[in-house]
Image 1 (cartoon, one colour):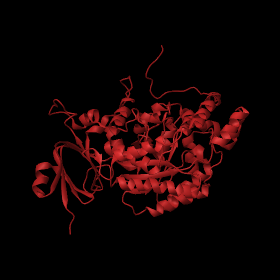
Image 2 (spheres, helix red, strand yellow):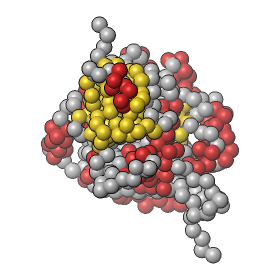
Image 3 (cartoon, helix red, strand yellow):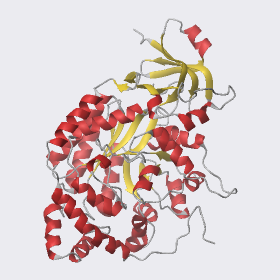
Length: 509
């Protein structure tokens, strides 16, 4: 029996290639059958059930190209924003959360803002058994939520204290008073319990286990070149290539990650990755704040992509990525929220607006990204980063039915000009609270603003009860506070080269 047909009606339908007024999307099973004028498609499928209305904007599912499912946000855990290298230590004081509950809460926020696909970079380690348990818990949450995911586990094996490998860790440890050295050794494991071989085996096994799953892909997620070392990074990419999957890592997020290049490699980090032969269209970088012109040429040539994460970059003092130059250079760009949005609200619409506004150079000769550019980054750009350009990121025949229905009544109140550009209105005014219904793979996973696969309130209550029962990690907080000034002095001693910014926002003279 043929699968039933459903129609999705919109005042505006933003397909990813065009903007249609009073149009409809025809869905059969998990696939889009056609997109066109509402009266025409309704006449052809007059008995089909109808979703949406003349008051909705219909969008392709948004793609969050880099994320960490934090559950209860850091701000509610007493973790303040800081420079990345210092912030990583303060996070040791967080009370641990149930992996499944944490992932479900994060998935709920993503669905509520119209995200239908996410690259979730997760941490594993300690042992093979513990890593498998973590992966299983997180993936069970995604299955329940019905969210499309590229689940990307990673483990740190080097540079557990400071950038530069085990020798640098030992040198930094020697700068600490003896009592603080003992505290570091007691509270921060200086060796990863999960071996490199164990890591590769856990992820490889999971890739194979889920290779036929419609919604779940499993990638390799080495946290960063400095945290895994060259040998393991190359082996990771080789394993990914054998299994036909992808790799995402953090790179050039902070200023000091940029300086790792000349300090430890004798060349830029991107040039070093290129010399290792790891860059390809199946390799993506999170952040890329500190790329140079030659880095951009390498990324464009190799097809490696970047997830741009503007909120996180601002919050962790990483800087502002040269998005205009990256787009002009032909680098594939996605957009990510990183679990660290500016307002802690996981609102993808706000993230798109922020990304656009940060690039608005005060000099008229400079080209700046348009709102359309940012919408494409959050849809077709993310799809290309995921290697799924022919199945998600657009509302087009043959594409998967990943559809977002946004109520226009609030964003167009009290009046909207009939000649207005619908894309501009949605990009300028839509908010998470306007997302009404979300469909993924033809299944409604958000209805009336609430997930259909679980009760968000129950998840929040369970997490609150779990966290309330845990003791304050006062020793970890005191440890982080004690180490911070020594770490600050460590990085202050690095030589700072003369910098030539891509955009000069202001001037003293």
